[in-house]
Image 1 (tube, one colour):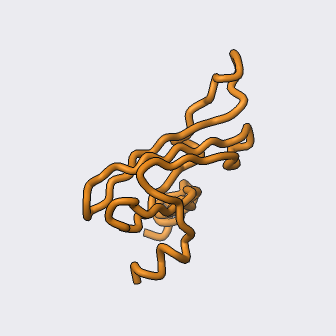
Image 2 (spheres, rainbow, N blue to C red):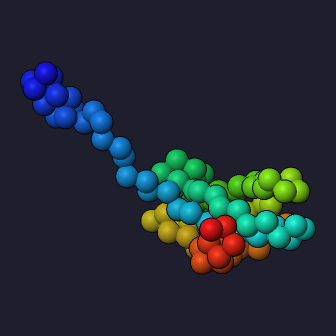
Amino acid sequence: MGLLDSLLKLLGAGRTPADEGLYYYVRCDKCGEKIRFRVDPRWDLAPNYDDGDQASSYRVTKHIVGQKCFRPIEVTLTFDQNRKESGRSVTGGQMITAEEYESDTR
């Protein structure tokens, strides 16, 4: 099995990829539930063609639903060409920090 294990290791079997996702936190305006959601900047972002033929930025819209009241919270995040966050808007909730999220969920 030593040769097979070495070959599998060389091919990358058994490795878990690094999580490159961005984690955000919201609080529902109606029930106060705190919810964590994830955005993967490699796969979730869509080109934003508002400025012309070429995409000068990216955008993602997430509809987040908690487990208490099932009221959707809409979050739209915009990113620059380097996929760094440049703006956000929230309907039905408020963005909170990771610390605020952790304070009641532990």
